[in-house]
Image (cartoon, rainbow, N blue to C red; front, side, top):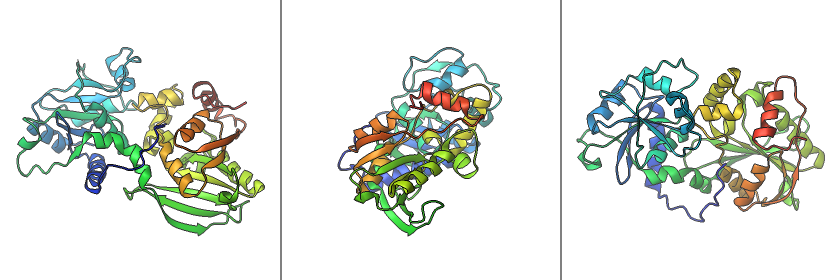
Length: 373
């Protein structure tokens, strides 16, 4: 989880913020963008880039293209341990650039792994910003990158590539929460909590919304009961037995109704922040023997990519800065405290295994440190 305390004022001006939003959209479309830095890079996600995008990179770069991967993903391709490595691993790409199918196989460990022998090379200065762009787009963090030939100013007229400062991509997750605002509020009687209401929050990017489910008047309590619940399409909506998310969500609402007040922050951070599609990919890897943590890492993500600044900003907007946290996860407590939220107490929120999620719950306890006793 991101823990650093947010600066009181964001230095991302509106035009620069728009550039980040557009870069995310371009990445999802597979269109290359330029990372403006001391050594500018043309970058595109391996998952979405097409033949046209690769041709553009080949045309406008100096030919030294590489595939950037997290060490946890690169380890499987290079077939040796990179657990002590940090940052990004760069694998040399041939010129003209390798075909899109091979790039996708290199990025996605759930695909059949028929890959060439890649040569490892030094990653560029802006490697972390390039991987960050892939993550912000909720794609696999695997990026095709190449230095701009002669610098950004030398690109020919008509190439129409978007330029975004590399530092802005790195700063974006922490600063996005500062722009969070309430956009709608409505009464929504729930089973067991007829006085519930829903408040929708939206950030400056006008994209993903986050919800607060309020039971009673929690802001009137000296330390209201609060649950941070990351959305889980499979568990919350479909009733999947692979996790305990559905019971946790419904149990939290019932617990708050019994107390007369409380708030569930329903955060759009599926799969600990990696997104629904990547969570489904992680499920495939779990079916092949990996646990939750190792599956996320095999895809190139950290064990937990959630942005706790979003939750802290919502709590401040709801006038709840001193809370009792309904959680089994000590890391949530530490992360919220680092963002200035006072945790008066931890309230346990464990549910019995159902016969399917036993290994999942065991991984939570043994590898994520959840308190499930």
